[in-house]
Image (cartoon, rainbow, N blue to C red; front, side, top):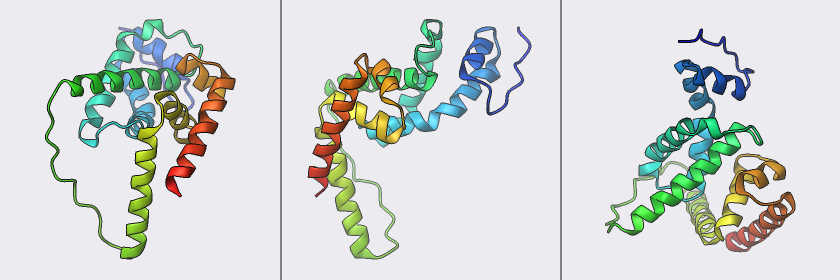
Amino acid sequence: MAQPLPRTETTPDAALIAAWQTGDEQAAAELVRRHARALARFLTGAGAPESELDDLVQETFIRAFRSVDRFRGQCQFRTWLMTIGGNVLKDFGRRMKRRAVIPLDEMVRDVTGDPHELAEASETEARLAAGLKALPRLQREVFLLRAQQGLEYEEIAAALATTPGAARVHYHHAVRRLKETVK
């Protein structure tokens, strides 16, 4: 087993990947610590059910670590991870289509605060969520990677196998459609 890599917040992901490949389990744990929350936000925004979120994040990391030897560094590790997460979510969606699901009551929401403001916020949130689901897959993914994850168009293009110009166009159309939905 290799000597563990001394880590700081500035240790590059590539160094952590290399350390993990030589047997440093703590390097893998650090990668998970750094990226799990952002991955969960991305998956939630892309339509992952809250009840399945932890499993989807875990499955994404399992797939990433199994195929980390194919990560060539053309994009950031997080971008590559989001791409894998999107594929995990698509696979989950295909599995769910084959199963009959009976929805349970929604979890009880926080009822503190001004009821009128809560109602308006809830309505806006519901319209936004519906608008996100109604977007074509590529527009939704570009929007989430740009607006939620803060990725640049070049990174989005690398993650989604498109061009930066096409990513800009998809983002523009997604924003326009979401604004119409929320009005």
